[in-house]
Image (cartoon, rainbow, N blue to C red; front, side, top):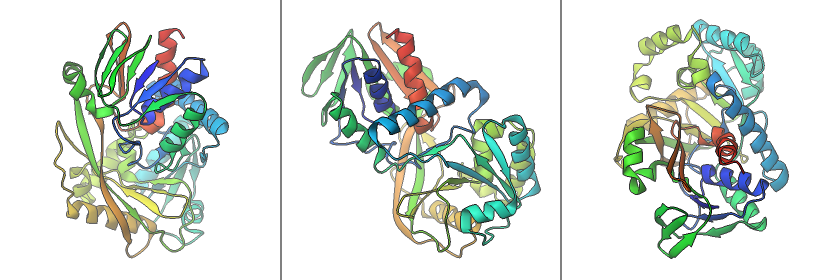
Length: 366
């Protein structure tokens, strides 16, 4: 099997293919993975996915934990925490905990304050929710370490080798032709550069997001990703709760600018204590490369308010880009009998990739 793309979608398929005894070769146009897989929060938000993805969620969690055990990759199981700062938000979390006790546990305001800041109450908390199935990885190192481990397990990597096209088991690259029984193309939003007709039919656009890395605020102690009201409106499992209508109305009235920038106000700690924070979303076929400082400043102020601190010190800023489709969360398109295009098109590649890999290889019957 040849896999085009060494981001998390491609590597999850490589892990699964090797587990099933296949010979695997991975090609990537860059010298190392530098795309969506390293620019995100490293949050596997398994608990808050819509019920239609239950099987994928279970398989993904198993896949992550199995890969971690085999490779030594650090994966945290205290992965997610949602904070409520109003009665409507708490009602939504109560509804979700009642609907999915297998995925969530309600927390009091005191428990949330203790988890986040060791008892110092941040940001007017009224309660919270532990997302008990969520996992966390450090996105700056995870795909690199997975690639190194796979190389040690016999997977061949051809870096700085761009795919120019593939058909019937032949991959045309900038370094010549390669052949395989199966070809998986896992190039995220760049599918339109190779199969524009597939991208057009799937309605794939590029989603651009503004993120930052900030110093650890004094007193912060959580290792979990911390989600907020805008997250409740973004993740399908939470957004399906009846109280989501009231939460949306509340956010619209109080902080409409967050909805205008399609914000998901959240943070995720790195092992050194620094925080990955963000994010806003904009959608287009080709993205403007320029970051908007007003958006960055508004996100930082909102996160500071959630944490109950005056300000955050920024170390880095960047633009993330991933594939997005209004039609479907997943793209699995068979270009021909031996070539399959695979992408996660809803921004949760870290969450669903391992489950998707199992599904795709099951479909192949290998």
